[in-house]
Length: 245
Ligand SMILES: O=P(O)(O)O[C@H]1O[C@H](CO)[C@@H](O)[C@H]1O
Ligand SMILES: O=c1cc[nH]c(=O)[nH]1
Image (cartoon, rainbow, N blue to C red):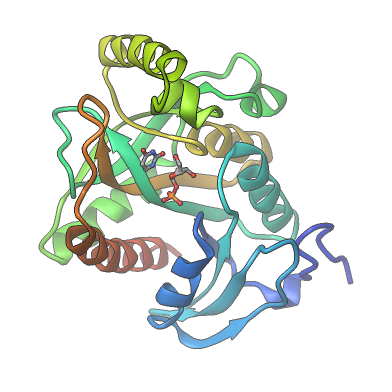
């Protein structure tokens, strides 16, 4: 049976849909919400678990950080037969979004190097509308709401997104002006590449993130609100993704 090159899994190891998560510690925490969680062998630090939720079988896969590795994980899982993907995590946000809100991607603009290899000229890359709506409904059922909008994605965190030196501050500040004009709501390091890869591979994908860093002030969500938001994020993500056939 075919085995994925980097992940090392075969089709028998995985569900029919996937949640992609950056931080591998989040895989351990979301696994507690799954029925019969089965952790898969870890290679290169890529931690995954397969289990059930609401009668559906899914795989939660950690990719670390950044578009190249996130798209490798999506591409390998798509090649094994997964047809729906949801990235969850955290993002920098622009007004009118506020800290602690859930932001779902309806589309994304790519300032990273991976998306052109999948869908050159395809910008803005579109998210799957059924998945976006399923997340919207799952949030409402949980007494929460999601804000829908455009994501922008970069590779160079300390140059394009967040300044800790003069060169980074200047560049990130110029980017912020551009993103404000474009009406971007959230910034991360994966979404545009995942949407482009999903489009090219004919699978469904979107991103749902908790807004944790104010793009204008660089103020961070405090740890208690982050922990609480993460729990709600997991519930909305699992319910929304598993509501679809
Ligand atoms: O979503 P999480 O894993 O929190 O990661 C987010 O924070 C990292 C730094 O920008 C990027 O990987 C980004 O997408
Ligand atoms: O600053 C941040 C915080 C979360 N996610 C990002 O991509 N950037």
